[in-house]
Amino acid sequence: MINIKTALFSLVVAVAASSAALTLAQAQQKPAAKPAEAAKPAEPAKPAAQQQAAQQQAPQQRPAQVGVNPVAQAAANAGAIDCMGQINRVSNFLTANSRSGAYLFLSPTEGAQRLTSASFEIHAQNVLAYASASFSPGATGACQALYESVVYWEKPCAEVAKAAFGTLKPAKAIMKDIEILADANTLRVFLMPAGKGCVSIKKDVIY
Image (cartoon, rainbow, N blue to C red):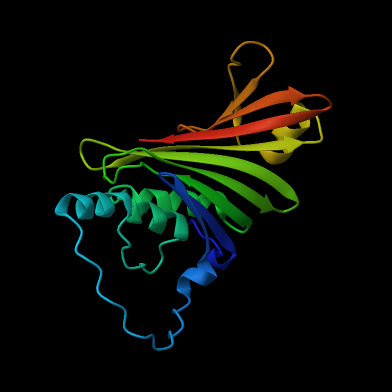
């Protein structure tokens, strides 16, 4: 099961040339009632071309859905409807039981057939990890995805392999220095020596 304490989820979203910070708590708050304002003169109507350009620049704000985290919701607002479910599942998996933040890369033009990518900062069990996940709609409507999570360990790679990835089996190395561990499916862990420590890169491709 993929679970997450979404109350600990923060989000930075990049859309075209703009960016905004958002936390789930803020997203769930109802806007405070605004005091009455004096009536303002009506602005002259914009030409149709200008109105259309303005609509294209601003992503459509879709109603928040129950069980959808802020990363998936922001992607859906930008038009990544086909991949919303996959983005929700993968980002929940990567950030489960952690304090996490995300930087989301969105297409400057709204459209369901665009590549969407997210980078995560993850704090869990005294470990700091960087993770990246990318999502692309397929021709049949299914959304393909891949993710990578990167952690530096202050111990040799041989110890990391046993302590953190003991259920995986050794696979053929890329050359001679980066060890590969694998499961029976598409999950791979690359172990790269780094000084006296080790960097693990966990990667999975979801077709």
